[in-house]
Length: 158
Image 1 (cartoon, helix red, strand yellow):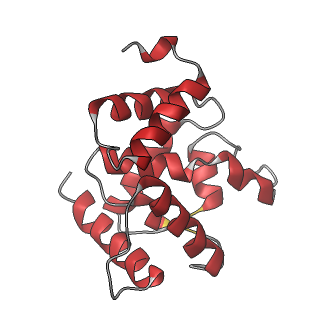
Image 2: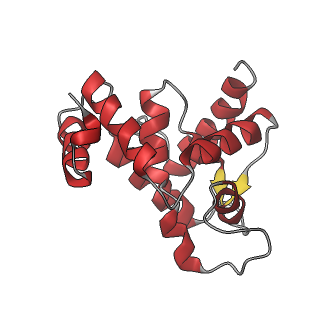
């Protein structure tokens, strides 16, 4: 199927349909996710992913501003506005990581205040959207921290 011929809405529908069916790793869904990331013009997806992977290799967390700068949403020295977080496609990053057999690399993202309730709520939403479930007996914070550690360990092998 030629993804380039599909509209943005058709791409999103393909992803959503596969998500609901629990088949986000199917080749058609993976192709749709790849096309969606390619079309994102407000965030340089490739640069953002590479930034997260480099941070993981270095064993460090990142904040929204750092990720926004890496993805070209703003330049160093630009004034940060809270609405800019909406330009960072964290759910798409979770989808991409999942379909590329990576840990949930968005566990590296936190606010300048650290890991907050809003960070955990956003992380939970990204997991839910992708179809990843928090293991029984774990809180979302436990899973967030375990995914962060798993990301650090995974990244040094890549």
